[in-house]
Amino acid sequence: MNTPFLLENRRRMTVTVRQHIVECLEAHKGEYVSGEELAAGIGVSRAAVWKTIQGLQEEGYQIDSMPRRGYCLALESDILSREGIRPFLDSRWKDIPIWVHDRLDSTNQEVKRLAAEGAPHNTVVIARAQTAGRGRLGRSFASPQEGGLYMSVLLRPCVSASLAVDVTTLAAVSVCRAIEKGSDKKPMIKWVNDIFLNGKKVCGILTEAVSDVETGMIDSLVLGIGINVTTPPEAFPPEVRQIAGPVFEPGEKSIPKNELAANLLNEVLGHAEELGSHRHMEEYRKRCFILGKNVRFHKEEKDYTGVAKEICDDGSLLVALDQGGDIRLQSGEVSVRTD
Image 1 (cartoon, rainbow, N blue to C red):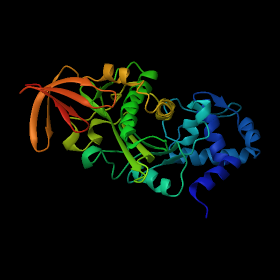
Image 2 (cartoon, rainbow, N blue to C red):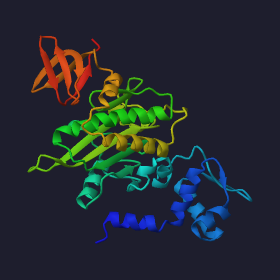
Image 3 (spheres, rainbow, N blue to C red):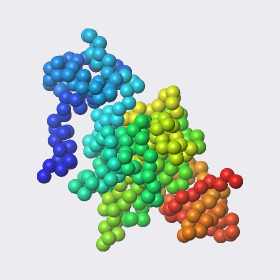
Image 4 (tube, rainbow, N blue to C red):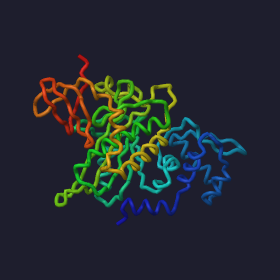
Protein backbone atom coordinates (compact mmCIF):
# COMPACT_ATOMS: atom_id res chain seq x y z
CA MET A 1 0.00 0.00 0.00
CA ASN A 2 1.24 3.48 -0.81
CA THR A 3 1.26 5.21 2.58
CA PRO A 4 1.82 8.99 2.61
CA PHE A 5 5.38 8.34 3.76
CA LEU A 6 6.26 6.15 0.80
CA LEU A 7 4.81 8.84 -1.41
CA GLU A 8 6.83 11.51 0.41
CA ASN A 9 10.03 9.54 -0.21
CA ARG A 10 9.18 9.31 -3.90
CA ARG A 11 8.51 13.05 -3.92
CA ARG A 12 12.05 13.66 -2.70
CA MET A 13 13.41 11.51 -5.54
CA THR A 14 11.38 13.31 -8.18
CA VAL A 15 11.03 16.99 -7.38
CA THR A 16 8.24 18.56 -9.42
CA VAL A 17 8.66 21.69 -11.53
CA ARG A 18 6.35 23.57 -9.16
CA GLN A 19 8.29 22.56 -6.05
CA HIS A 20 11.61 23.46 -7.65
CA ILE A 21 10.37 26.90 -8.71
CA VAL A 22 8.81 27.69 -5.32
CA GLU A 23 12.00 26.60 -3.53
CA CYS A 24 14.15 28.80 -5.79
CA LEU A 25 11.90 31.84 -5.52
CA GLU A 26 11.56 31.49 -1.73
CA ALA A 27 15.33 31.13 -1.37
CA HIS A 28 15.81 34.36 -3.40
CA LYS A 29 12.77 36.25 -2.15
CA GLY A 30 12.82 39.86 -3.31
CA GLU A 31 15.34 39.06 -6.05
CA TYR A 32 14.89 38.22 -9.72
CA VAL A 33 15.71 34.71 -10.89
CA SER A 34 15.97 34.16 -14.64
CA GLY A 35 13.60 31.79 -16.41
CA GLU A 36 16.64 30.16 -17.98
CA GLU A 37 18.12 29.41 -14.58
CA LEU A 38 14.84 28.02 -13.28
CA ALA A 39 14.40 25.84 -16.36
CA ALA A 40 17.97 24.51 -16.27
CA GLY A 41 17.69 23.62 -12.59
CA ILE A 42 14.88 21.13 -13.21
CA GLY A 43 15.53 20.24 -16.85
CA VAL A 44 12.40 21.67 -18.47
CA SER A 45 11.62 24.34 -21.06
CA ARG A 46 11.19 28.00 -20.25
CA ALA A 47 7.62 27.66 -21.49
CA ALA A 48 7.01 25.06 -18.75
CA VAL A 49 8.44 27.49 -16.22
CA TRP A 50 6.14 30.26 -17.42
CA LYS A 51 3.09 27.99 -17.25
CA THR A 52 4.01 27.01 -13.68
CA ILE A 53 4.51 30.66 -12.70
CA GLN A 54 1.02 31.47 -13.97
CA GLY A 55 -0.40 28.66 -11.83
CA LEU A 56 1.39 29.96 -8.76
CA GLN A 57 0.08 33.46 -9.37
CA GLU A 58 -3.44 32.06 -9.51
CA GLU A 59 -2.80 30.40 -6.11
CA GLY A 60 -2.00 33.80 -4.63
CA TYR A 61 1.79 33.96 -4.91
CA GLN A 62 2.90 37.55 -5.60
CA ILE A 63 5.36 36.95 -8.45
CA ASP A 64 6.53 39.74 -10.71
CA SER A 65 7.94 38.97 -14.16
CA MET A 66 10.26 41.19 -16.16
CA PRO A 67 11.84 40.58 -19.58
CA ARG A 68 15.56 39.73 -19.42
CA ARG A 69 15.44 39.65 -15.61
CA GLY A 70 13.09 36.77 -14.87
CA TYR A 71 10.76 36.27 -11.93
CA CYS A 72 10.69 37.79 -8.44
CA LEU A 73 8.67 36.61 -5.44
CA ALA A 74 7.59 39.71 -3.53
CA LEU A 75 8.96 40.12 -0.02
CA GLU A 76 5.41 40.59 1.28
CA SER A 77 4.24 37.30 -0.25
CA ASP A 78 3.44 35.08 2.74
CA ILE A 79 1.96 31.74 1.72
CA LEU A 80 2.82 28.73 3.88
CA SER A 81 4.45 25.89 1.95
CA ARG A 82 6.98 23.17 2.69
CA GLU A 83 9.14 24.54 -0.12
CA GLY A 84 9.11 27.90 1.66
CA ILE A 85 9.89 26.34 5.05
CA ARG A 86 12.77 24.02 4.10
CA PRO A 87 15.36 26.73 3.20
CA PHE A 88 15.16 28.04 6.79
CA LEU A 89 15.52 24.66 8.49
CA ASP A 90 18.75 23.56 10.15
CA SER A 91 20.60 21.01 8.00
CA ARG A 92 19.69 18.06 10.25
CA TRP A 93 15.96 18.74 9.77
CA LYS A 94 16.02 19.42 6.00
CA ASP A 95 14.46 16.07 5.05
CA ILE A 96 11.77 15.66 7.71
CA PRO A 97 8.29 14.93 6.29
CA ILE A 98 6.27 18.15 6.11
CA TRP A 99 2.63 18.28 5.02
CA VAL A 100 0.98 21.66 4.41
CA HIS A 101 -2.80 21.88 3.97
CA ASP A 102 -5.01 24.81 3.17
CA ARG A 103 -7.61 23.62 5.69
CA LEU A 104 -7.93 20.73 8.16
CA ASP A 105 -10.28 19.81 10.96
CA SER A 106 -7.29 19.70 13.34
CA THR A 107 -3.56 19.30 12.75
CA ASN A 108 -3.32 17.16 15.90
CA GLN A 109 -6.02 14.84 14.56
CA GLU A 110 -4.25 14.62 11.19
CA VAL A 111 -0.95 13.72 12.88
CA LYS A 112 -2.73 10.99 14.85
CA ARG A 113 -4.12 9.60 11.61
CA LEU A 114 -0.69 9.63 10.01
CA ALA A 115 0.88 8.07 13.12
CA ALA A 116 -1.53 5.16 12.81
CA GLU A 117 -0.22 4.66 9.26
CA GLY A 118 3.38 4.50 10.48
CA ALA A 119 4.49 8.12 10.29
CA PRO A 120 8.10 8.53 11.46
CA HIS A 121 9.50 10.66 14.26
CA ASN A 122 9.46 14.41 13.47
CA THR A 123 6.59 14.27 10.97
CA VAL A 124 5.07 17.74 10.68
CA VAL A 125 1.55 18.78 9.66
CA ILE A 126 0.69 22.44 9.06
CA ALA A 127 -2.65 24.02 8.18
CA ARG A 128 -3.50 27.54 7.09
CA ALA A 129 -6.85 27.12 8.87
CA GLN A 130 -8.60 24.61 11.15
CA THR A 131 -12.31 23.92 11.30
CA ALA A 132 -12.18 22.00 14.61
CA GLY A 133 -9.05 23.26 16.36
CA ARG A 134 -8.79 22.06 19.94
CA GLY A 135 -7.26 23.51 23.08
CA ARG A 136 -6.72 22.14 26.56
CA LEU A 137 -9.57 20.86 28.75
CA GLY A 138 -11.63 20.02 25.66
CA ARG A 139 -12.04 23.63 24.60
CA SER A 140 -12.16 24.78 21.00
CA PHE A 141 -9.26 26.82 19.62
CA ALA A 142 -10.17 29.59 17.21
CA SER A 143 -8.20 28.99 13.99
CA PRO A 144 -9.17 31.56 11.35
CA GLN A 145 -7.54 31.33 7.95
CA GLU A 146 -6.36 34.92 7.92
CA GLY A 147 -2.89 35.24 9.46
CA GLY A 148 -2.62 32.00 11.45
CA LEU A 149 0.02 29.26 11.72
CA TYR A 150 -1.30 25.93 12.99
CA MET A 151 1.26 23.16 13.36
CA SER A 152 1.52 19.70 14.88
CA VAL A 153 4.64 17.56 15.26
CA LEU A 154 4.80 13.81 15.82
CA LEU A 155 7.45 12.82 18.34
CA ARG A 156 8.35 9.22 19.11
CA PRO A 157 10.56 9.54 22.18
CA CYS A 158 11.52 6.63 24.42
CA VAL A 159 10.55 8.27 27.71
CA SER A 160 8.08 7.65 30.52
CA ALA A 161 4.58 9.10 30.36
CA SER A 162 5.43 11.40 33.29
CA LEU A 163 7.70 13.41 30.97
CA ALA A 164 4.90 14.36 28.56
CA VAL A 165 4.50 17.75 30.28
CA ASP A 166 8.15 18.44 29.42
CA VAL A 167 7.10 18.71 25.79
CA THR A 168 4.56 21.43 26.63
CA THR A 169 7.01 23.54 28.61
CA LEU A 170 9.80 23.19 26.03
CA ALA A 171 7.31 24.11 23.29
CA ALA A 172 6.38 27.29 25.18
CA VAL A 173 10.04 28.30 25.38
CA SER A 174 10.50 27.39 21.70
CA VAL A 175 7.60 29.60 20.59
CA CYS A 176 9.02 32.58 22.50
CA ARG A 177 12.47 32.06 21.00
CA ALA A 178 11.11 31.65 17.47
CA ILE A 179 9.14 34.91 17.70
CA GLU A 180 12.10 36.80 19.18
CA LYS A 181 14.49 35.52 16.53
CA GLY A 182 12.85 37.56 13.80
CA SER A 183 11.37 40.50 15.71
CA ASP A 184 11.71 42.81 18.69
CA LYS A 185 8.72 41.20 20.42
CA LYS A 186 9.06 39.90 23.99
CA PRO A 187 6.44 37.18 24.46
CA MET A 188 5.74 35.80 27.93
CA ILE A 189 4.36 32.47 29.18
CA LYS A 190 1.19 31.99 31.21
CA TRP A 191 1.46 28.68 33.03
CA VAL A 192 1.26 26.17 31.64
CA ASN A 193 0.89 26.48 27.89
CA ASP A 194 -0.26 29.91 26.70
CA ILE A 195 1.91 32.62 25.12
CA PHE A 196 0.95 36.26 25.73
CA LEU A 197 1.89 39.60 24.19
CA ASN A 198 0.49 42.97 25.23
CA GLY A 199 -2.00 41.28 27.55
CA LYS A 200 -3.45 39.09 24.79
CA LYS A 201 -3.08 35.37 24.13
CA VAL A 202 -1.23 34.92 20.84
CA CYS A 203 -0.47 31.19 20.98
CA GLY A 204 -1.88 28.01 22.48
CA ILE A 205 -0.15 24.65 22.90
CA LEU A 206 -1.75 21.22 23.21
CA THR A 207 0.29 18.07 23.86
CA GLU A 208 -1.34 14.65 23.57
CA ALA A 209 0.41 11.41 24.53
CA VAL A 210 -0.22 7.84 23.42
CA SER A 211 1.26 5.41 25.94
CA ASP A 212 2.02 1.69 25.94
CA VAL A 213 -0.02 0.32 28.85
CA GLU A 214 2.33 -2.62 29.43
CA THR A 215 5.61 -0.69 29.58
CA GLY A 216 4.32 2.67 30.82
CA MET A 217 6.44 4.30 28.11
CA ILE A 218 5.22 6.82 25.58
CA ASP A 219 4.58 5.37 22.12
CA SER A 220 4.13 8.78 20.56
CA LEU A 221 3.53 12.42 21.43
CA VAL A 222 1.53 14.86 19.33
CA LEU A 223 2.56 18.46 19.91
CA GLY A 224 0.12 21.03 18.59
CA ILE A 225 0.95 24.75 18.38
CA GLY A 226 -1.39 27.46 17.13
CA ILE A 227 -0.03 30.98 16.62
CA ASN A 228 -2.03 34.08 15.70
CA VAL A 229 0.73 35.59 13.57
CA THR A 230 -1.06 38.48 11.85
CA THR A 231 -4.69 37.56 12.55
CA PRO A 232 -6.81 40.75 12.47
CA PRO A 233 -9.19 41.29 15.42
CA GLU A 234 -12.30 40.88 13.28
CA ALA A 235 -11.19 37.37 12.25
CA PHE A 236 -11.58 36.08 15.82
CA PRO A 237 -14.97 34.87 17.04
CA PRO A 238 -16.67 37.60 19.14
CA GLU A 239 -16.39 35.57 22.34
CA VAL A 240 -12.55 35.54 22.27
CA ARG A 241 -11.75 39.01 20.92
CA GLN A 242 -11.07 40.38 24.40
CA ILE A 243 -8.67 37.51 25.13
CA ALA A 244 -6.91 36.66 21.86
CA GLY A 245 -4.67 38.85 19.74
CA PRO A 246 -2.00 38.67 17.04
CA VAL A 247 1.77 38.62 17.42
CA PHE A 248 1.95 41.44 14.88
CA GLU A 249 -0.66 44.18 14.80
CA PRO A 250 -2.04 45.41 11.45
CA GLY A 251 0.57 47.54 9.70
CA GLU A 252 3.50 46.12 11.65
CA LYS A 253 6.35 44.36 9.87
CA SER A 254 5.95 40.66 10.61
CA ILE A 255 8.07 37.53 10.33
CA PRO A 256 7.12 35.60 7.16
CA LYS A 257 5.12 32.58 8.27
CA ASN A 258 7.43 30.12 6.48
CA GLU A 259 10.42 31.53 8.33
CA LEU A 260 8.55 31.52 11.64
CA ALA A 261 7.48 27.90 11.11
CA ALA A 262 11.08 26.89 10.40
CA ASN A 263 12.40 28.83 13.40
CA LEU A 264 9.85 27.08 15.57
CA LEU A 265 10.71 23.63 14.21
CA ASN A 266 14.43 24.25 14.71
CA GLU A 267 13.77 25.11 18.35
CA VAL A 268 11.23 22.35 19.07
CA LEU A 269 13.14 19.52 17.42
CA GLY A 270 16.39 20.58 19.05
CA HIS A 271 14.80 20.81 22.49
CA ALA A 272 12.98 17.48 22.01
CA GLU A 273 16.34 15.70 21.95
CA GLU A 274 16.83 16.84 25.57
CA LEU A 275 13.54 15.52 27.00
CA GLY A 276 13.92 14.77 30.69
CA SER A 277 16.96 16.99 31.19
CA HIS A 278 14.82 19.99 32.31
CA ARG A 279 17.50 22.31 30.95
CA HIS A 280 14.88 24.62 29.49
CA MET A 281 13.03 25.11 32.81
CA GLU A 282 15.17 27.98 34.07
CA GLU A 283 14.27 29.96 30.95
CA TYR A 284 10.64 28.86 31.26
CA ARG A 285 10.46 30.28 34.80
CA LYS A 286 12.02 33.59 33.73
CA ARG A 287 9.43 33.96 30.97
CA CYS A 288 6.43 32.96 33.11
CA PHE A 289 4.60 36.12 34.18
CA ILE A 290 2.37 34.61 36.91
CA LEU A 291 5.15 33.85 39.42
CA GLY A 292 4.73 36.03 42.49
CA LYS A 293 1.23 37.07 41.36
CA ASN A 294 -2.08 36.61 43.17
CA VAL A 295 -3.95 33.84 41.37
CA ARG A 296 -7.20 31.92 41.51
CA PHE A 297 -8.01 28.43 40.26
CA HIS A 298 -10.59 25.66 40.49
CA LYS A 299 -9.63 22.18 41.68
CA GLU A 300 -11.81 19.22 42.64
CA GLU A 301 -14.99 21.34 42.64
CA LYS A 302 -13.48 24.00 44.91
CA ASP A 303 -12.25 27.54 44.24
CA TYR A 304 -8.87 28.57 45.63
CA THR A 305 -6.85 31.77 45.81
CA GLY A 306 -3.20 32.24 46.60
CA VAL A 307 0.19 33.34 45.31
CA ALA A 308 2.00 31.53 42.48
CA LYS A 309 5.14 30.55 44.36
CA GLU A 310 7.28 28.24 42.25
CA ILE A 311 7.37 26.19 39.05
CA CYS A 312 9.04 22.84 39.60
CA ASP A 313 11.23 20.99 37.08
CA ASP A 314 8.34 18.67 36.25
CA GLY A 315 6.29 21.70 35.17
CA SER A 316 3.97 21.67 38.18
CA LEU A 317 2.98 24.95 39.84
CA LEU A 318 3.31 25.45 43.59
CA VAL A 319 0.76 27.88 45.02
CA ALA A 320 0.86 29.33 48.54
CA LEU A 321 -2.82 29.36 49.50
CA ASP A 322 -4.41 32.39 51.18
CA GLN A 323 -5.96 30.09 53.80
CA GLY A 324 -2.56 28.60 54.59
CA GLY A 325 -0.42 25.79 53.22
CA ASP A 326 0.77 25.02 49.71
CA ILE A 327 -0.86 23.14 46.87
CA ARG A 328 0.85 21.69 43.80
CA LEU A 329 -0.95 21.85 40.44
CA GLN A 330 0.06 19.43 37.69
CA SER A 331 -2.47 20.85 35.25
CA GLY A 332 -5.46 23.13 35.12
CA GLU A 333 -6.35 26.75 34.48
CA VAL A 334 -4.92 29.55 36.63
CA SER A 335 -6.08 33.16 36.41
CA VAL A 336 -4.16 36.20 37.62
CA ARG A 337 -6.26 38.16 40.12
CA THR A 338 -6.68 41.84 39.42
CA ASP A 339 -9.00 42.63 42.34
